[in-house]
Image 1 (cartoon, rainbow, N blue to C red):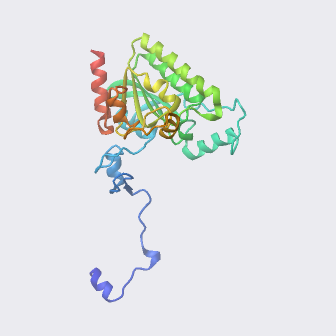
Image 2 (cartoon, rainbow, N blue to C red):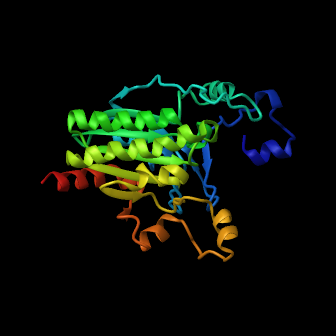
Image 3 (cartoon, one colour):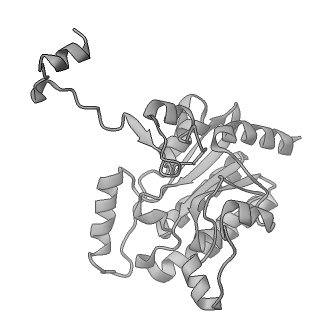
Length: 281
């Protein structure tokens, strides 16, 4: 029976027999509003098939994109923040940590792993923005430092994927100390001539930008990523002037000489292979 015949005869499907669309089956691009199948979006490395908008993703997705057959060894996975300042705002800091761990399934805002990327051994340290805005506290600084140590120990190139709102205010000075700590470790990596590639994604701001994110042998970024130290509103109020259009976008930062190149996520794995092969020659 056709739909028109059913309609004419007043035949309707009872509500309890209607099948709902499963959650997460479709994805709508927040930029161009195009709707696509979630499977197609994932196959496209979580970028829009219409406008190439790069959706924010986490360490699990980056590891799947980068490591051959999604095979890797995670290390220092169980490090968790303490409460050195006994900090309380709307809730106690330990309670905030526990709540974030339950919500995200992560221990903190960065994960470390090593494995093969297009057959090349590599260490990857990837930040997760969903954990307290990817803020850099003592654990983040320590895990970045340990990722550097792993590269020093093995000689494997290091890739750090940054996505952060900056220093973690609940750790105050302890958080700021991570800037010096990670920068000093990277100096050792440079002395050993082990390649370090910094990939900045949306957003990369604050103390992360002011330390390890901008210290790569190659500083690269995803398209349209927000990259900067202070936010546009703070800068505008400080200097009392309107900011240029596109200020702090990856394209603007590239144009002014602070990036080596912008890389499409769909090409990330292949371009990393080519870059590392070029460096090793």
